[in-house]
Length: 270
Image (cartoon, rainbow, N blue to C red; front, side, top):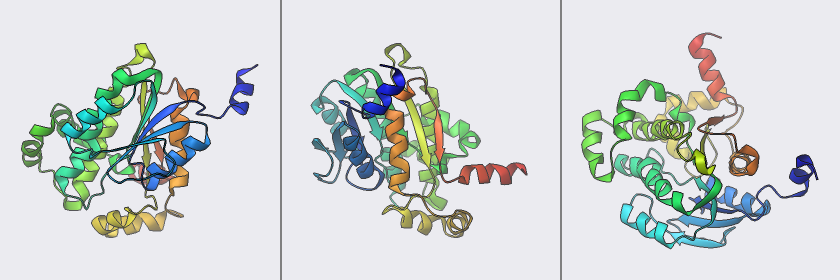
């Protein structure tokens, strides 16, 4: 049987076990549903209890390293992928945004490596908000070196707060850089890491972005034909989790209806 026949006859995630953080709502919920549809099993992680589209649920707070340590111990071995989707919007306290959107995600992922199967895929949900990561390299490089207990000092020194949604933007900038940085970290085991950067998506937290960014968000929405939906994002997450993307490493995939291309075109006068 040819590889083409295998892909057309076998569900994309057949018999794969995927951990989905933030599984109870929005993109995480739709990703869990699609993984099940594509033949996979879902181990869900969320602060909120849910029974939708999951095989096992672990209730955990991604901002708490002690809880994350216990979570990693409790999770089974033989995991085929992690979809790091849990996140907080820019209206949440800045310290919590940085903990959940990056520090907790990193801590959880790094401690899960030993439980991943060879050939596993890690997908980090970044954001269009991280587009300008190259303009914050100094701060990001320092941020990548700190642990939970150094966060408050870092925030004070680098003035990372909620003004203009900066805590959220910075968390996603750091996530994109960390993803690129780990392009080959686990290559000998075939474990790969990539990021997906959605633009504005019509989920329960879209109003938080509009509230925080004000006129800037309204201008973006006027340029776009529509906000994205969870159904626009989940198929790409599922594809990157699949064996069809084994040579995709350290990439950040824009998934924003063309908004990043618009921004670059405006910036460079195309």
